[in-house]
Length: 164
Length: 413
Image 1 (cartoon, rainbow over the protein chains, first blue to last red):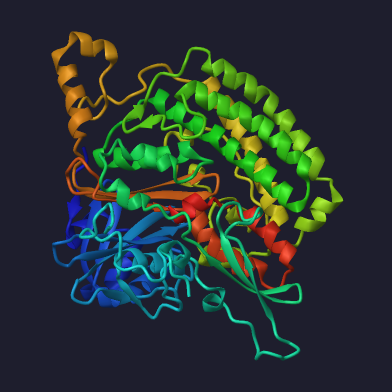
Image 2 (tube, rainbow over the protein chains, first blue to last red):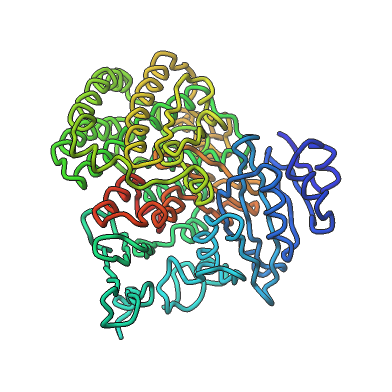
């Protein structure tokens, strides 16, 4: 069983040629909070305020295709939300996962629709099901739930059976 | 204003799109509601369309009518109990969803799956692709007005469903894959039946092509319609056959192989025409390639186990349970408590008939997944509808919806 490589220095030592990590460190090393290489998947933690710039940086580095944006709720831990971006490179045939911690006191993060228009639906889903507000989104409405629904169903403090 | 909660679900047309310019003007556009119940929207897709005469100016999809909260439900189930949930996302490719989920959890567990199980998985996945493409072809042609093809396609689809029933006991919601391998060894005559089916399939594909490829009405309804450039396709998250029909040579089976796909020889059909016709051509060729993959899988089917050597995850053989105490204990523990998965997060994508089907699984070390998220191809491809329909006629919207091959259960989850 392969063991995980933790910490950005250790990951950089293990993957010195990784374009995403080197590009991000060259762009703004302080925005890269952490990195992890686990089960042959690279995860890079980006500070919440820098996510748009980080996405632009990895896109310039050759990761051209946004696969997915989603969220994980670590309730009752803090930072409560983890917004996850899966970005694929058609040329390099590899993907990188960017994650960004979001505190529950102000659950919001910048939209990346200006970089990848496909983020539109994914981000609406994150807002709808997790209540993480997407700043600068062109059309932030609920997507799955009815407009006047109260609460955000995928939060961990929302019961599986719903409120009755 | 709607009062009952059921009616409240329906978003007023005017909140999505407004006719322009002011009322009474000669040039005023019209806002048309299409769906959620409409025969050509393949389920409960609702489109609000702004039209000028018959020309489409804007299309706004309104989705969520089938939202059942599968991702939330998964968090309350043991890992194995999630497999039947994945079937129900997409009724046309249950095996693909099973596979993507099982691969994700196997990656979390770092399990080695025996060759035989991997090859059977590949074979069943390609049968699923044929199954899904047959439904697509039948319904797509029916939307355009070619009714006969539908019956031809469903004739062959019935054969595939019988094969599924033979191997898994279920026609549509198969749940045949397990974390760690397969549920059961396939029945003795299963491979012979698949072989017999595959032998007559190329001839059937020729039949469909005879009905459609040279048919001037069909060709004129498809050629030059729903243009989507490669750059737009990538920007809008389009995957699968629509992406390849826009000239992007990308197939996860070849480029990021999973479940032994690297051991199979097949071509990835690509077209540079970027229209509905190109998507038709690409899918038809894909069906022929799927037949070849199944032939290779049958010819080189390895012998051996169908489950991984992981007694804490895989249910023991029935025989061993009667003779060995450990097996009985493991069986009891797996069934009652589930199996625990080491903490971590993985993303596993497979090439489903509609494009990239990805499962993002997060484990916190317990017996239930902390988070399961599905990246659905139709959900992303739907965003490209506006680009493909703008400036075309209403009748072309129907052709475009057929060409992106959406499944609403998968979009809404």
